[in-house]
Image (tube, rainbow, N blue to C red):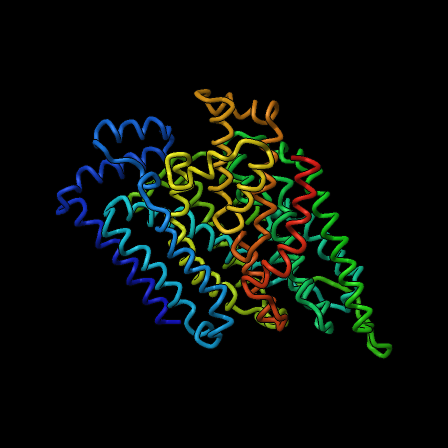
Length: 508
């Protein structure tokens, strides 16, 4: 692991070293630095159209990176996904011991030529995704993982179909109020422990990912990042209750299918509680960790409702409240570590490997994903124009936003199609005026974008933050989990896609 950390440090130093030549030695540095300034101004509130006009006016023929990047710039991202999908199957030992180095290799394969070709603009994009996206992502995941690891459900809880369905249903309900990540981290260990005597457990974890780690978060902006992003752009907090029918239908179908499957396997295994087993009452240990969990949820909500200005770090503008949130999340995690006895965590089978694995793999995913996100943000002016221009009807928004969210970051995907809808129906109108109209006159389009961005995150391990974490925790606990493609082929295509087709015909 020390070598992996050294690799990441080296690449970070490379990024910092490249900052100097761009401004001091590169003959085109002045023009490229101006584009960098424009991109920073855009982040601080300047409209994209105005910034783009300035670029064309003062920097000649230069356009945003998303408009000039070729489609093949997404190849490192595809290779990263293929590595996650295939290497555990064909070279499991190598993958298990060197997944951090493999992630670093694909990150470098994108970052090095990207920096060489685009200098300061490329460095800005890489630093932006690290400071504004990856670091908050991994801090939130670490805090929730740490705090939930200090909560232990003790007593006799045997995984019957009814008990398992109840656990998943409770987690699904909690997901909209404490986030899909928080609910998943809280409920996955009780589910695994209740079924430690069962032989067929893989499908349980998969349906848990479907419902608790994804679809359950559709009811409020606290549930999933895309909805929180919509809230920041003017969508009212309780508007997402309008997609309750879509959520209830999806949850109802999948829970019924789960109960049927669980009942079939339960009877096949003839699983039952041994007569001589001493039944112990259920009780929660480490309940003080719910205080830390509430602090995490409150910190996330706080970062979206107050404005304390911005601060620049290595040229990347971030809101002060976002840095405060990240610091508070770290404090909540450390507080949980101090307050929770080590023996309790050991009894809860807590280890750091799942969060380390996610941290190493997702830095590679985030960096190699940069060209894909830039192409997506370029809209009709980028290589994804054929896709963006084809989106017209509500079911287009549902499926296109959804399928992209299954493999890319669903937050920028949501924002891309959110802005596409605003531009299509209310072109030239300020956001403060157009968003209320989108919520009322064109509510079906906003519902399609919201449902697609949240629901389809369940289609792959990387579709939403907690998916890979749940998979890692389950695997470490001894539950055999399907491969990347196995998950998609055996479960997503068989259970999720038919469910979404039904949702499409009824609502979109």
